[in-house]
Length: 482
Image (cartoon, rainbow, N blue to C red; front, top):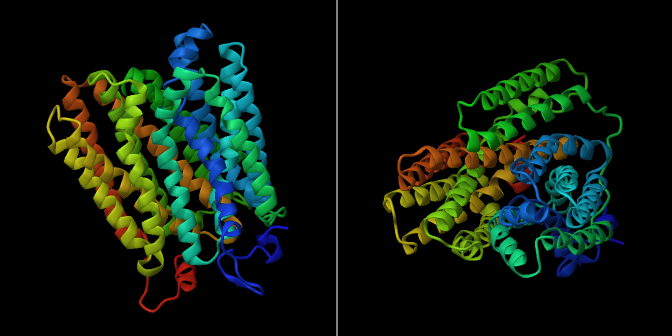
């Protein structure tokens, strides 16, 4: 059957009795996992350009239009940690495949939705499928590529998928809506989902199951409430302003839910996230770094999209092309960082990536209030390159710091903080553009804050990401970071 099963779940890049596995057998597990991840991230952004058309055709209210986007985001962010815990307990491949099925079927329901309420409900179920897919994606890659060099390359490709899917979303959405109609925004997920499921079942080995560890349902409910309330409050802050009572109430309730989660974790016999993991400098610091660079990158993409469309008059299709420099650099950076990781370790990659991205957004600020588009190409390239260059090392740091029994949970924690960083970046960018006396000044302020977030992440990386000790083997390095 699959190579991973025939070698006891071993490394596709390592030697077996018949020699090293190369060619398609090496790449198929990576292709399978990244296909599922690509669908999830694409659906966060591809819907944006389709929503106005959907609203008109389905006679949706303004609130209904908002929930077409927000319903997916809230469920996705809220249930990530639950998806990771289920993967650790029942097997990451099983939960990943379940998520792919849920996501694919709900995408079909979205495509054939006869009304806005049905579409909103189907989008929420789609978000649940996404929450089951994402935590297992990193855990399955760590399982399929245990050798540090192969794992770094796999994490690099995984990381670039996020940037490509997020930035290509508006371009693909605009192309589909203007040609075959908005329903194809969801229909394209069907062949991808089917192929992802078939490849995963055929070429990715079953994961270990830890059924003896009970699920801590009170903690899971608390974290779902905390993340969903905070994400909802941030989404509303971009529309209502940060001082709105509903926004303040959402933030306050999310803080209370987070405190309840922490108290529960200290008392639970089988905690969802053991306190020792949260106290780990590598894991906790890596999670915060993920929040900061998603804040910077997605805040940049969101505000740049608004600037290109509303101020410069670009169409959705042209806006996607204008953002392409940032997208183009993500794949190059991920491949490069994957190749360098074995030699340099993770710390230089994360530090350098965050520094380059921060300088890129600082360059946008320095370009002036109304810069010509050519002056923005280099800053966008720097932000895309730096974010993807650092993501490989950050993911590797997180996954190496967690025991194998908590690989799904560690992946979920990392992706939850990244999702929150994206929501904060978009909400803050929207608020700054809406409240600034001058649009250009609001845009520059947003980019300046993003640059500071990147630079803060660079400093945190130097403190939290373990260095590669001289003469230390990659496997020993991974164990030392735990």
